[in-house]
Amino acid sequence: MIWLFRSIFVMAIYTGMIIYTGLRLFVFIKHFQPLLSKRFFWPFYLFFSYSFFFFAIFRLDRVRFIRLVIMYLPVFFLYLFAFIFLFDMISLVLYLWKRKKNKKEQFKVGIALILTLVIMVYSSFHARDIKTAHYSLGFNNLSAENLRIVLVSDLHIGPTVGKTWVGRIVDCINAASPDMVCIAGDIFDSGTEGMADPESIASELRRINAPLGIFACPGNHDADRRTRSIDKIDRFLSEAGITFLADETVPIQRTAGLPPIFVTGRRDVRPIGMQSGRLSAQELKNRNAGEISPFMILLDHQPIELPDAAEAGFDLILCGHTHKGQVFPGMIFTYFIFKKAGGTHYGHWQKGNTRAIITSGAGVWGPPLRLASNSEIAVIDIKKQ
Image 1: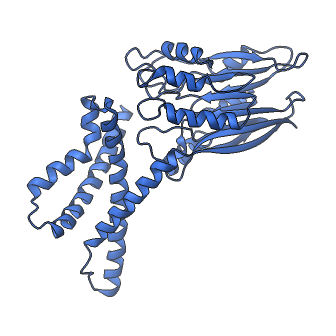
Image 2: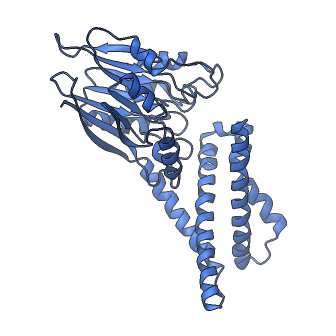
Image 3: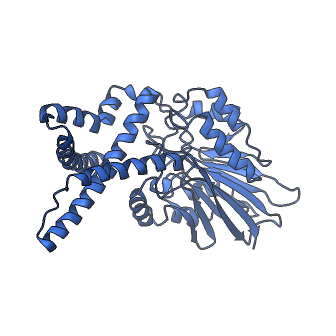
């Protein structure tokens, strides 16, 4: 029931923002169109404000153009409200100071509209620009050879992220010349059914060049919308040359005579629509306990159990999920949520001998926008310390 109360709370806040913004917009438009009536303005305004809700109910979001429009609108209204409210507060302070009202106060809404549109356009282009984050880590129990891993997460392949976007991600991966590629979940937006051209997506993924292999774990979005199963995803990724690990471990023998590296992929802690449990970090580690303690990499989509994985003895944990908030001020919330869980929402984390890297993801969820966060791949150079 907690999710229901949270949803009601969020909708109440959003409704307050919409009403406040609507009142200011009506005055602004009426200044240029005096014949505008409230009976005409409010039905259209509220329809567009809540279109994401109505279209989701009737599943009209399957139409790509409609989906894009309705995903942009909530963010548009969020920033428009923020600018209008900010300007109103500045005007209030100036009025209390000078006791003089600005006669052209309604033009603040026009400035807010322009700034909002500028931010939307910038965020849209910025989301499609794949960056590269670099990390260098040293471990005592690594073999003498260095290892380069590319971590990618949260592609959210589907109606928004298609062949072109995936192609840019693959180009960035190959430019880094990795030994191994790890995909930390949310490969798809809602299973494989959201892809417009599955074969072209698989063809792009097959272009990834990683001599030691490509390994992936499921994320909370990686389930078929109807069956709530990950079987189709497993088959699709296998055909694309990617090893899909759901509470499974595989050894990687890079050089004969040296201890292998183990890669473990966990099931997601909160898969959407699925009730399947997952093994604990300790149970996963115990599966491979032997006379020689190998170097172990854990792929875990959500970084909310980092301390448990460190306690179990994993050497390197690779995560995604947070998107680093994706759009401002989302990173403020993700920072405190994952800090409270004992980890972090982005970058490097360490406890004892265990290191973790959390990436902001290479794709987007919801609106194809990023502000104060990057679409990225993470290049991790591992050396013997």
